[in-house]
Length: 550
Ligand SMILES: Nc1ncnc2c1ncn2[C@@H]1O[C@H](COP(=O)(O)OP(=O)(O)OP(=O)(O)O)[C@@H](O)[C@H]1O
Image (cartoon, rainbow, N blue to C red):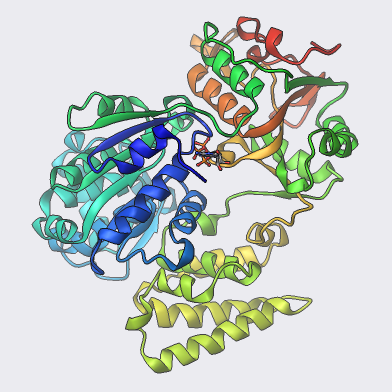
């Protein structure tokens, strides 16, 4: 693929940059091309830090950077939490706080006894370091010394350790040349502080984001930091505004949604559609089953996997999963995926390996321990365990205990010091539940993708069915002051517009906005449904495909 002039400028710029990218404008392409060029200039002990928002996005970026045997040297690819824990808190926390008295476990504060939870009510992910009192810091240090990192404290602890530890700064300076952070619009305060502090050491910073794709404000994330960086004189701002993904009528629709005065692109056809189905979610699934074949033929889509059903919440996800007859795969994130303990990550990667021939055993192992650091006998044993794992997954009925024993044996060789009971119990939970286990299996080409809009970020499909376009659901509304349901208010209008925008902009060829005359409410009751405000915002219906429903 040949970069455009806009993309080439960014790839060629060696200094600090902020890249403001529209959906489908090739930011993943640009970052991976840039990183590949940098790899060539690094010594074996040097690397880049590449932070993505999810494990899935990180795997995608890593595989795009490592084509044709390219050597990543000592680079870090992963999420911000894994970076903070593995590169800052665990290796340098002990210099600042003292040695933990047992192996570190990373848990949410709601796993602590109730009385301890009460004393931690102040702890939130978006708490800024300068708002942390000495007493509160002491509590976090107490947990660290007792082998516990609370998930809500990861940003705070990383920020504190990075600030205080000269050894940590020296290590970063010797090792890393560049730091890339994707989805910067969903940054937290501590992430922003650490990014600037790493940059101040002389490590080149590259932040990538799109203000309009900010959808995580509910977890303390905010696009103000991307704004803030854009006006920082040390950073050069680049724009990537040409959408290479979507049909012009889809680009027009998403742009108009955000700004009705937008200039529309010429387009011969209109490929944003709306359908209101008689009935509730069950009838929607029947409708989808009925139209898949004709959609594939009209839009020349050869495989079901290029079609997605995107929903706002897990209630609709379950209803679609239960009722849709067309082969489909629901993508959910399991607790094993979310757990930040080393053994959990290793088990999750081993499950992906077990189901997907494209995931190589050695690559999984090397994420946790470089092959040259594994003694010959252990390599022999690992290869035996690899064969045993493959054998177990080839059996018609999975022997749960044999798989668990095999994975534990691998973990004891690769990460003996990170032994973790919770990780073993999460693995057990996944292996005991076919629905959870199947999330580790890649979709076949004949399966439609079903997922939440949040999870679809960064992905693309030929055709998108966008559900949940009801009043109260998207955008969400809650009661007004004093629990006044007669005067409801929007809980987060801008974030919800962004969510709608992300969903539509996943579609390459066409998007069908779909709702129904009835819907299932939070209590599981079927009630009369009304249209989402977004369907008629600024008369946007006028730029949709016209049919009898509009
Ligand atoms: N220079 C180019 N020429 C042709 N196609 C391109 C070019 N750059 C990107 N594309 C295509 O545009 C699509 C979007 O690219 P990519 O996945 O890198 O976008 P993105 O900006 O990361 O998307 P998003 O933020 O919406 O997830 C891909 O199908 C990619 O192949």
